[in-house]
Length: 213
Image (cartoon, rainbow, N blue to C red; front, top):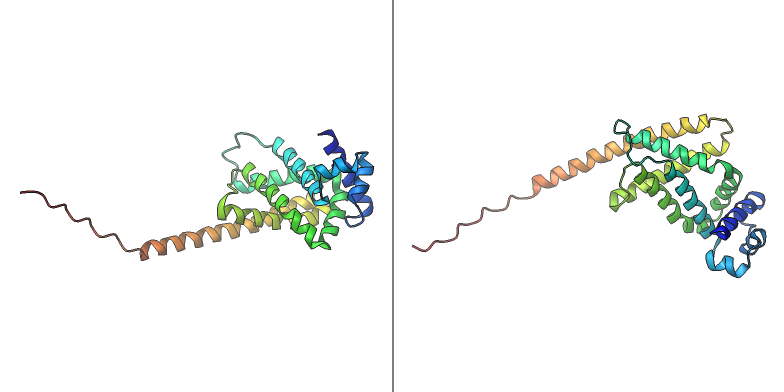
């Protein structure tokens, strides 16, 4: 476990200094003082190392989640608090995240490889807020939250304020917009279900079994 942490730390350091494309697995192994064969056995790709980094951020986010959330708190409030905890956890790694975001924008294959890890992180946020991330609706929630996160992250990368005020404003605005779309989707889904129920014919009444006289 200690070696894994050293590898992730080395990768983030090199990505911040050199950028995503110019960092190799061998360079990460050298920086982490880990034999290349051992590193490769744990992480066969750079995307796998970033996935481990995101999983550690997920763990930090979950540590701040209460087992019994306040029933008076809205889902939007819980999403806001949970995502802000995520940005706080990412804050020490801002340079690496900035270099990673820039590099992945130019490397669609690596971005595609990291998509499952990102969606897993969004599933963690949803479940922490009491929203299911399962099934078709859950998948839609994950993708919608991932798009929101990517948008707010661009603001976060430029936000040098002590309280992340600009990030909070951007996040609140995006969550309000997402909440509006979710409510419209729910109304449409209810209307479709109602129309289907009206079209379904009522089953014919069961005929009474003949009785022996």
